[in-house]
Amino acid sequence: MSDITVTDGSGALPPISKGALRSARRLLSRRGRDDAGQFLAEGAQAVREALRWPGRVSLLATCDPGRDVDFVAMARQRGIRSVLLDEAQVETLSETVTSQGLFAVCQRLASDELPVLEDPRLVVICAQVRDPGNAGTVIRCADAFAADAVILTRGSVDPHNPKTVRASVGSFFHLPVSVGVDSVSAVRWAHDHGMQVLAADGGGDSLDELSRSGALARPTAWLMGNEAWGLPEAERNLADAIVGVPMWGRAESLNLSTAAGICLYATASAQRAGGSD
Image: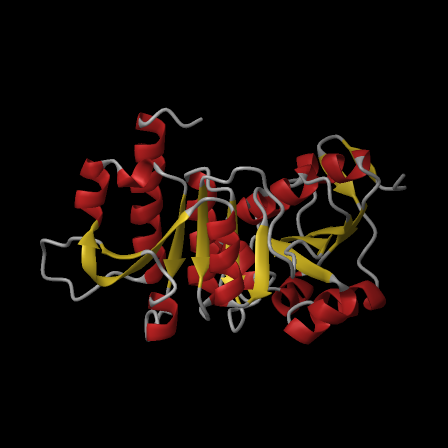
């Protein structure tokens, strides 16, 4: 157990050591995360879910133990070392303009393998998604609409990127996330699990029509493209159908995370209306 004491709603914590701070800073780079097999969660919601997560958390760091007394207590119960940060140290660990000054060092979460699931009903396959904020928001949407997993294909952003973890607002800890899988294998995996694969892209079938026809009630894997160039022809050809989100205003297009949220909501609603759990 930790030797940290918490008294009168305020924390009496030791300052972070130079070695621990240096190790945490390395997690801001992909190479550092890969070498350590760890990543950094920042912010109250992400850290809360990290402390609830059964995986290994090795360090809790806060600049305000009085404010974060509940987090320190949770860490203490799990035997996780807690330390104090000053403002300068917070700035070296955070990539946000205004940091909450609360961090956790966690073991690697995402898998390099396809998820092991029984009878998945809703999955997102992101093809070469490069923007960390978009990837994190897609994970958050998938969690919100009870998707079974998120698969990020080869060439996508590292889901352990601090911006991705932060954009997921804790959802990264709630569902399986795979990374580095090629698109062909991901689509084959979905088909092997009895799922239809729908590519969210311009043209093709209307999402509204599919919803009205009952087609969305089937087990479904959504194939989502890159933010800049969408789905290349090769990925489009892997799908069972191309589906477009109808728009009635003057916007030129929807960004990836918005389109993912709409498609996931429509599918989850259809599945529940059709009697799926």
